[in-house]
Image 1 (tube, rainbow, N blue to C red):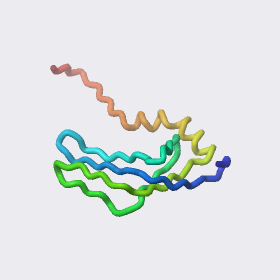
Image 2: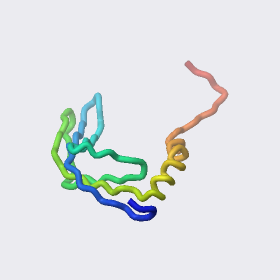
Image 3: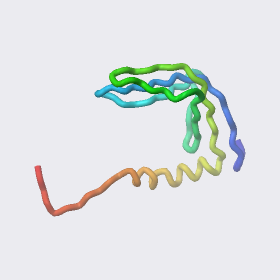
Length: 98
């Protein structure tokens, strides 16, 4: 990995998609123990996984991990806190209700 160059890595993975009332999620677990670092991108190969309501679908897939360059990784660490704050919504009002 260089200052401006990206590396590509292939990894087998397990994809779990849940479409239940209690939990709506999609998780990817790398079967070879690969670790994702700040700025890295993951692309899971294969068709879209659609779980019917009330079910969990688990499939084996292959993923491509696009490793961030050193400069991208540094930029992500420096600006990541600001991007998280965009997700926050603050509301100030004079009314207090319980």
